[in-house]
Image 1: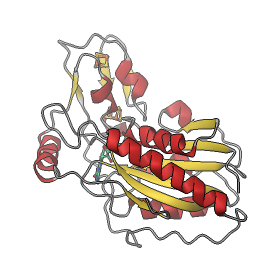
Image 2: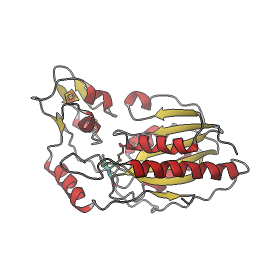
Image 3: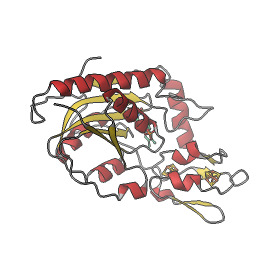
Image 4: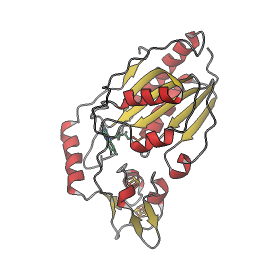
Length: 270
Ligand SMILES: Cc1cc2nc3c(=O)[nH]c(=O)nc-3n(C[C@H](O)[C@H](O)[C@H](O)COP(=O)(O)O)c2cc1C
Ligand code: SF4
Ligand code: SF4
């Protein structure tokens, strides 16, 4: 089978999942690459026509060893008919637990045919300059791995006789899922009024429209999913996490998850 078109489908508040998907697409090397970005509220509302014979790369971050709830809600509208899919999760160097299996099962439910998968590492959402957790990842080594993975998956698809070929993709994870997912914490980042310039960036990157701006920044805690996009993209470093439990988790990750993990891939050999 020839790969003529690639569609990247993703939810990626801090951009690491998107970067991994783009690198895989670089390895697949077709001219026609379309982005279906479900990260922002307006992106979540787009109506996507059913998929047919394109190749999709579908990716999400890992939250609490599972897919973020918003990913499931946003991806559920997708419909495919044996469309070949590469499934990708990106996690912050702790563990991906049941998330990739959950993405495989979701992809199958939507009508995709998962041909290969990968769990890549991205800078942890909770990482800061002071409390590093996989900072700077995906780095150049990760990007090269993603490109090489794309090359191999394309070779595998080219060797397939038809999209209906039986593909048995073995993905680690437990079912029923045992990981808890992101726990509700009823906390959100706060704004340092003395350095905030009310520039609007944080509101424009928030996937759940939890931030509104008038004369100052207001956050609806109940909508916040703690994705940390507002913290990472604030040009003044005026969005910070002050909650003690959240800071303790970040410190724990910094101390216990600092041994570099490498991407794991499934369905092809690198
Ligand atoms: C609420 C929440 C829970 C997370 N849970 C995990 C986890 O269980 N394991 C892990 O290694 N990383 C975890 N992470 C880190 C993200 O998976 C990681 O930073 C990912 O690269 C973010 O993707 P993005 O840049 O596409 O938003 C979590 C992040 C958030 C915001
Ligand atoms: S991005 Fe930062 S500086 Fe801009 S409005 Fe938000 S908190 Fe203020
Ligand atoms: S307010 Fe919450 S959901 Fe919105 S960008 Fe910030 S951390 Fe993410």
